[in-house]
Image (cartoon, rainbow, N blue to C red; front, side):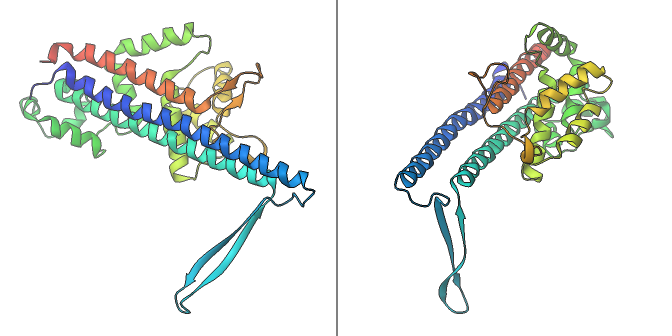
Length: 302
């Protein structure tokens, strides 16, 4: 099967389409939440101006069918003060942002898996040799692209985890780590793109499997022990602690993965777009990977 540059470009184009959709949905979600909060505030002002009881802004009854009696029954109600209602809206807004991050990571994961499959197909030596156990060098050359894609998608690779794939890519394309190190050194924000990708994968895991909560202290300690942060200096560790802390709430919500926009603590008139920043960094990393893999495989493309 002949593979061209267009095949590799199509992998990246599909990722771009999905990540742009996530970015658009973030903007739309932010607007809807802003409108809802504005309406809540106006409703509260009306109640207050009329000197009515303002402690409860809304009461909602839940009705369901009692199948045995064949009649509708009320099973309970919920009321909320203005402050409680506002917090519910913000928590739901944050929950939507959490799932947008999940979508973004899964788009990147599909991109990386497809790219990795093409790397193994075009350059058998790109993958760890254990992946070809029981096959000779000649037999490997006869394997079709579908075999490589299935191997990746069905998690049958020796390098199943994200970190393991990134290590292998770094080993085969040394310029990746070199470029990232130079960019990190020269960037005023000192962005570590590879770490960001792994952080997003860990946040995604907690959103999907723990309702968006994680023990902040334990989460950060575990990350500091894992690739690529193992063996860094204490001073560097503290910087990464600060980076990870940005994505958690405060006070009673300190264990909630929090992605809503917040004011910059050093420049109060500026907002920090936590989700948007993560989306941009994931995209930048994918773009770099795509370009370097194309260069690495150039001699093997039709």
